[in-house]
Amino acid sequence: MSGRPPLRSLLFIPGDSEKKLAKVDGCGADAVILDLEDAVAPANKPAARRLVAEFLAARPREGRSPQIWVRVNPFDTGLTLEDLAAVAGGAPDGIMQPKTDGPADVARLSHYLDAFEAASGTAAGSTGIIPVATETARAPFHLGAFATAGLARLAGLTWGAEDLAAAVGASTNRGADGEWAFTYKMARSLCLLAAHAAGVPAIETLHADFRDEEGLRASCRAARSEGFTGRLAIHPAQVAAINESFLPSEAEIAFARRVQAAFAAAPGTGTVGLDGKMLDIPHLKAAQRVLAQAEAFGVG
Ligand code: COA
Ligand code: MG
Image 1 (cartoon, helix red, strand yellow):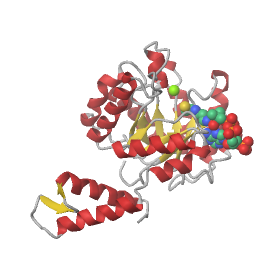
Image 2 (image 1 turned 90 degrees about the vertical axis):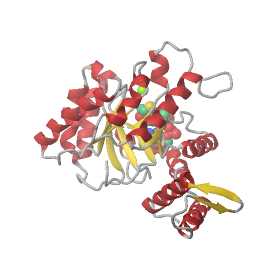
Image 3 (image 1 turned 30 degrees about the horizontal axis):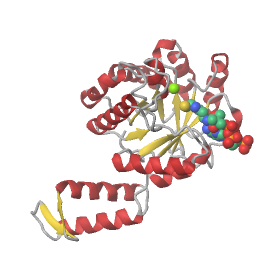
Image 4 (image 1 turned 135 degrees about the vertical axis):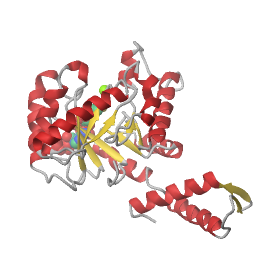
């Protein structure tokens, strides 16, 4: 969705927890995702819908910081429409759609939002959608189709390993080395490629061990270096590390400026030398991306 600042950190908050909802202001996240899905027990769904609706109603409808997103229940639960009916009038910045099979599910949700926006006087098309695009066995096969699906609401793609493991009857999603097992690495890479193919941000999955700041920072750095631009969080203690990790560093910004200057000094040239190394157009594009990120977040 154009016109929105990029999201580095997206903090999940169970929609039925008044105490945790009270932590939104000052949590530092770029977005919060008020959850109506798996963080809420079935008996609490109606109460969670009410709380989330009240929460949205008490806030301005535009320019919110953090952005307020809602994770709804997937279609096969039969709960999606009730979730949307409860919260859409509050004009959430976007809807996170879990267990998405592919672009057709996002298109269906988008049609629902067309109707809810019209009914509640919310600007048409203003509600974004981020699907969790690897949580079913079918989903990875449809990732490439996001690029040509023409989904104007698509605001990013993210992936999840827990539900995918459950979907395939796996007893673990980790290898003996503690890293993601092959299936999940593949799903993650396909999500990364699909997001870039579709021209939307790739959002890394959560780091479940919320006391492990060192591991979180290391895996955020790895994700950023691979092309992810933000990450899901489950605990407020993770937000600062995520925000910092997904900003370009001073050294990266300084190098990007030098790369840009080297190309500017040689107009019409596709290859330049810098510090004894060859640079060509992909290096210039990478430098421009770093500088655009720095400008978006006002750093450097
Ligand atoms: N959002 C807002 N506040 C949160 C929070 C969250 N996601 N997670 C924890 N907090 C608050 C706690 O309420 C607690 O507040 P207090 O100091 O006023 O008591 C404080 O942060 C410290 O929490 P802590 O005791 O470290 O964690 P916990 O045991 O209370 O909660 C979890 C652990 C995992 C249950 C909790 O972090 C959580 O609910 N995470 C989100 C889960 C979710 O939405 N999952 C869906 C996507 S997978
Ligand atoms: Mg899940």
